[in-house]
Structures are given as structure tokens and as C-alpha cells.
Length: 253
Image (cartoon, rainbow, N blue to C red; front, side, top):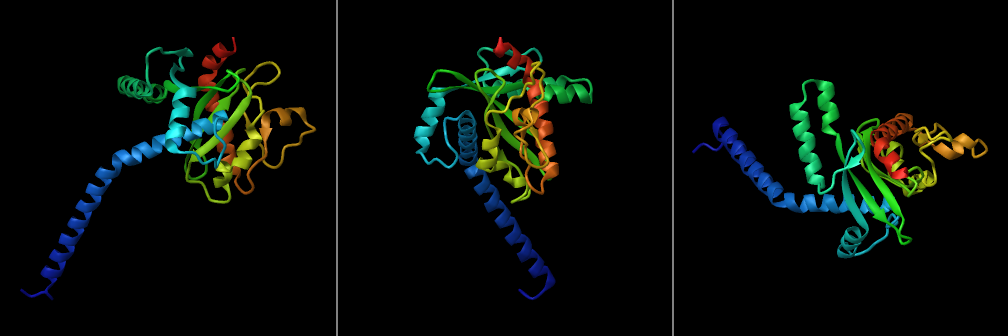
């Protein structure tokens, strides 16, 4: 066998590539359940951080945190069309119903609306017995879709906490959206104005002036050098709050 021939070299390269590809595919399949479990645990931690049940960077055994989540948080499925909680439905049911609705939609706009009609809200109970409503938020930043959670207090209007846990924004710039110190600036902001109209939380370009009541009530400092990311966060937070507004209004009553 001529090991220097082009045919031999090509065949050897193809064999190695196929073998490595098969090994990588097998490894990915084997690790899939573990990766999914890790992602779910990370999601639960972010829900608890937004709700104030866990401090950022606080180290506790996974079993303890999972028990805390089970004992203090209840996930409910909300129909954002009418704001009603669907009793007996689990998060997996929301995914299924959204897919079914999108498949049955007759046009692009209807399909887009159906894809997110049923959404999951985590209702957390504090030490004082009061409820905190943790809403999933997500939308376009500069380079990526940013995912997070926004927690509202029992009045369903005052921010209790926020986390941005998954994104592909520029480190040191837009990536600072996950910085606990910046997220802490959201606490206490109101999503409603004095006439109870929804305004959301606005990420200002620059620094909030506490002498201006409107800024102090509704705005947070911007991230330096990340105007597009900040504008994206302002936009998608308002959009998601609007989707949940009928549900939140029923909670306020």
C-alpha cells in the first residue's frame, strides 16, 4: 500500500474525521440530560435571585437550593390573551400549547403572537408571607438575545429584583447587564406612573438625576458604551410587561 498516495491520504483524513465526529456526537448525546439539568438549575437560581430568596454569588449546596425552590416558588401558566392563570397546567404544557397555536395560525403575525401566548410566571413567597411575581423577560440587545427575570413585589408594580443571565453582549460593555451592582439599581423602581399607566423601567443614557422625580421613579443608570444594549433592554422589558399587563392588573385587584 502506497501511504504517500493522494488516495491514501484522503481516505485516512476522511476516516479520522468520521471517527471523531461519531465520538463527539456520542458524547453530546450522553451529556445532553446532564446539560439540560444544569441549565434548569441555573434558571431556578436566577428566579430565586430576582425574587430576593438568594443573593448573587451566594454559595449553597444544590440540594438545598432545589428544596428552597420547591418550597417557596410555585410556577403558574398564564394566558397573556386574557390574563388568566390556567389551573393544572405545567410549564411543559405552555410550550406545547404555544407550538400547537403557532402551527394552527393562518399568517405570520398570528403565528408570532401564538408562539408566546402562554407564559410561565414564578410566584415566590417571602419570609413575611408576601408574594413576589417573577416574570420571564427577553429580547434583542446589540449582538444577541438577552434572557432574564424581572420580579415585582406584592403590589405587582414595584421592582423587587432583576437578573440577566444569558446573552452574547460585549464583555465590559453590554455584558455588564449581568453585573449584580447594576441590577441592584432596578430595585424599588415602579413600572407604573402616577396615573397607573404602564411605563416600564427605562435604562437612561447617562446617570439618573435623583432630583427629578420621574427619573428617580422609573429610570436606571445606563451602561457605559452600550447604548444599543440599553435601548434594547428598555424596549423588551416594556414589551414583556405589556404582555403580562392584564395578568398583573388582576393581581393588583
